[in-house]
Image (cartoon, rainbow, N blue to C red):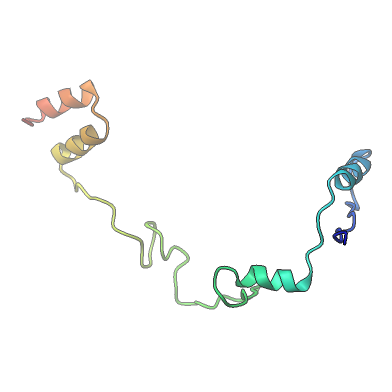
Length: 115
């Protein structure tokens, strides 16, 4: 039994000649049709439950939570804390040298009195 194919869809406001090129591309490589049952299977593949549908225009469901929550930037609960060297130039130079062992950083460390 041949598989059903999605219909060719044309852009309504395409540039001259572009519409025909898009139609030819779609006809050369037609996409298979996705029935409702397969769409539901796709939604439940990872969670076992149908994926909720949200509107990007709906009001927030977390009005008290800052938009930066979950990041290491701005207010809100962040991810794991970034390593801190404080305001100590020696600790900062040592950490920089650990990441990038450059001769100039070594010279800086020696001038700061590091062993």
